[in-house]
Amino acid sequence: MALLTRIRGPRDLDRLTPAQLPALAEEIRTFLVEEVSKTGGHLGPNLGVVELTIALHRVFDSPRDRILFDTGHQSYVHKLLTGRQDFSQLRMKGGLSGYPSRAESEHDVIENSHASTVLGYADGLAKANQLQGHHDRPVVAVIGDGALTGGMAWEALNNIADAKDRPLVIVVNDNERSYSPTIGGLANHLATLRTTKGYERFLTWGKDALQRTPVVGQPLFETLHGAKKGLKDFIAPQGMFEDLGLKYIGPIDGHDLTALESALTKARGFGGPVIVHCLTEKGRGYRAAEQNDEDRFHAVGVIHPETGLPIKSAGKDWTGVFGEEMVALGRERKDIVAITAAMLHPVGLAPFAKAYPERIFDVGIAEQHAAVSAAGLATAGLHPVVAVYATFLNRAFDQVLMDVALHKLGVTFVLDRAGVTGTDGASHNGMWDMSIMNLVPGLRLAAPRDADQLRAQLREAVEVSDAPTVVRYSKGAVGPAVPAVGRVGGMDVLRESAEERPDVLIVSVGALAPLCLETADLLAAQGISSTVVDPRWVKPVDEALPGLAARHRVVVTVEDNGRAGGVGSAVAQALRDAGVDLPLRDFGIPQEFLDHATRDQIMAEIGLTAPDIAGRVAALVAKLEGVSVEA
Image (cartoon, rainbow, N blue to C red):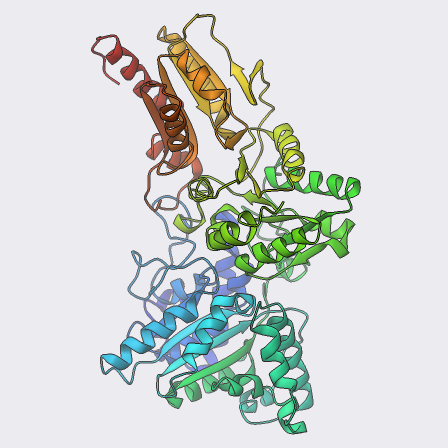
């Protein structure tokens, strides 16, 4: 690491000769494989942008020139070149974030880790530079070809193209591995040289990206092919973007440092909006990643650096249970179709896609379109299952509300990684979905506690044809089955008390059932009796819950969602509406952005552990009895 250790900031790159840069790139790839294999993280995307990031920091002067990343999972090389080379605690408490972090460095302008937003930021920053007289400070936005499938990216492009004198460089990191890279001396001249191979390659990329883009994609692609265009414009790769008023440079070999620096230098000097189209190879330089057909090691856990194999074999996880049940449902019901937003494998729909390829729709990074397209499918008599991460459903709230619920359509939204996810940081915790969905009239929301309940409640959800349904579950391994000992209304009783009027009713939400049972045990050790119920469907609140609560002295809700507007709030309202006046304590996630750490560490920090909950509940019971105790 002789060269890498000499880099403490971007301007240290200026001291290296062009002949040294390939060696630096090799050192960075070696470092990434060695370090990320110990902690887990986004390996493949970063291996693919080594040369591109080096070139960016040699041509542009960060932080004076703002360099922005979308979505940010390819920022590890950027971190290394801006003085952050301790990856020993990557994505761990106290260590480096897996995304850009404003708290870490002045070189991290935004820490967005939801896709397709960077061009909007860039547009705003470029406008601010113009208003403030900073005409010599270009804004650079690095966006992946996948993120260009998001509608927000094209909304921003429409605005960016409106001003010809705002210096703004859009770097398209195109790592679609079905494309063979443009290499050799031609790469340095593709800004002006027209070759059939280059055009066909770009047109294929543009067609795929645009035709996956809702609303504006097809018209833009048709414009490229439209009437009144000569053969030259028909095949010119820049034609589509020039129709929008954007200068186009490329395609550029994203691993040719000379070509990259030349193209980026031209873009920097242009003085207006420019697109630099770079072709990169995800996972480049790491054989295990290059041979991984699924995702080129997009994200890995702890792996063996030589083989790329996991150090520990994972047990059955929530995602896998969902994937298996979807295949079974697809076999039984021809009307069930599935939708994913560029997350086929991560959300567990790959087995369904293999079994029923004609009934799976990947809409790209376009959650809003996914919801509305599902509404269309449901209107036609099918039952769509839309599988996304819980944090990403936030982006489609209006569509769930006005396009699905208002029309009383049977669409099932399956939310993976609900609750505290941990190491991916604030943007990926699924802590808002139940609060947001609680606002939607008619929507029904299930929170299964174990694998058996996930299977059962998914089946119950797809039986609903006149309203949207949501099934949400946690990230990672699914624990053992939690049996019910009784039933009240639609709720499962997980623990009963022999007392005629037990002290505490604990309302357990989803995968927190074992935590709630442990809390009940701790309370019992202090002589406090309790009943534990799992509502199964937390929206609407079960009609039997107020009556059950009235037979207790205290009601406690425990959920892995934000406390504001969550299950606790809904239960409190239901009790008030029923005239049940009891002390209620709601335990959940505080309304704040949580730093990256392990899930257990975060749960301990926010007080979602059995000892914390039991202590506070015991103090409340003692207060009701007029006894002074320490919580």
